[in-house]
Amino acid sequence: MKTLYVVNSFKNNLGDFLIYDGFKNMITVLNKDIQINEIDIKDLNTFNFEKKSKVVIPGGPLISNSLKNANLDYESFFRKTLDHNIDLILFGVGLGVDFNYSVGLSEKNKQTLYKVSKKYPILCRDELTIEFLKKNNINSDLSGCPVINYEILDNPRIESTKILISDPGFRNINKLIYYLILCLKTVRYLSKNHEVEFLFNAGYLNKKNVSRKRYYCQIILRQYLKFKKIKILQSKDVIEKNVINQFNEHIGFRVHTHLLFTANNLNSTLIAEDLRGLGQIHLLNSYLQELPSSLSSVSKFIKKEKILQSSKNVFSIKEKSFKALNEIIN
Image (spheres, rainbow, N blue to C red):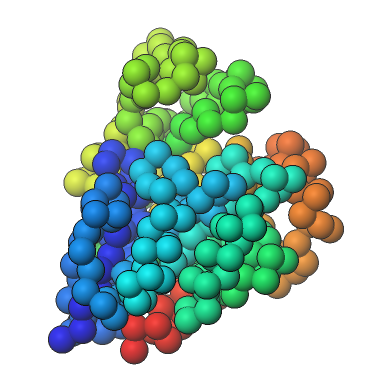
């Protein structure tokens, strides 16, 4: 029986859960004989893999300027896989939330990614990431995000007019107030004529772990929802109760909630607040068209309010996703 080590970064963020579970579902569909060994991301740099092991990191904003984030020093782990002859597969990854094109990658990080991509291309969730990597001579291809394959099959659809609103991530420090006001206006407008519920994808922020501004933006939002008597959902409600089938539509800021609705043929409108949202909007709405004129124009492009409906191209993405994974595991 083949063994595949799959990295799980889920703590309380719905998106991380959907990525890991969506990827596992894909493996089961393609080859039920593969044994999946789960590795917590925090243990990745200390885990002793055997030579020739296959390790998959599914999803996430992995391509950052430093190749590091709060969970892991990816650059160190990538070099470890190269040094110990471990097969590393990056599936459905993308540019970091606050990726700076003008900074780019250091020569050391470019070389590391180049070596990682020699055996298996870096499989990306959007074309913005692919274009950046290819400009740096790093082998890459499109897989889409694993969440696009997360289908909820066991819960029948409930006829409903309810709308689910998802929260801003409040990660763009320069535009915290802008997105807070935009979110408040969205809630106020939709709640006038519709029954709405509100989802905090990653739960309530802990002021010990985030900036004061980010924390208090969420506090203001929570107080407003309480004032409007709007029901609040947490990630566990979606995970344990499959509540999305109770809604007619999603409107909001969270990429993975958008993809979850889209994957299950439910209406969804994504408000892009960073490169993740921009990449998915472009992928799902202009899949066969050219990118914005150049990477240098992306920063200007992202500043515009981008609210676009999901398209039927999701089926093409799903096919590409399964094809890319099948070529690797089989």
